[in-house]
Length: 125
Image (cartoon, rainbow, N blue to C red; front, top):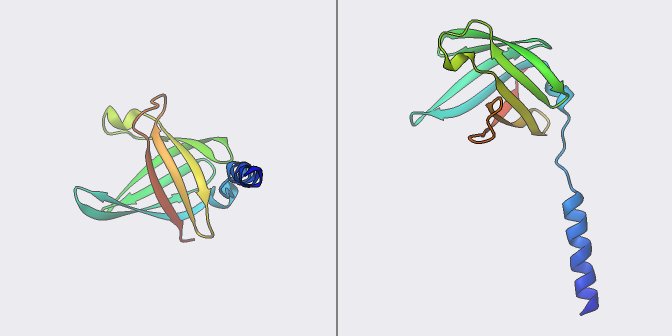
């Protein structure tokens, strides 16, 4: 019985120490695609990011945002030319895990702990 408890304790220790791979610097710059459902329809956004700017291309329109990196895996996005009050609010982006060509991220309005969303982006260039 003690062996089973010891093995159980070891497995808990090893799994609690596991962290997902995060090679965030591989995704700091480049061209990316993000797909999501909007009003029941699958839509695709393409965006190009460098150290300080991100240009989004969605449904034939482009939009430019400034980027401020907090650390290698987190940054703040703020639209340069907001069209309304909602677009004036900055968004906090956090890369949660990375893979060869994709990363999973969490995002939400700066200063708002609730209503975080998740997504996956694919690096295409």
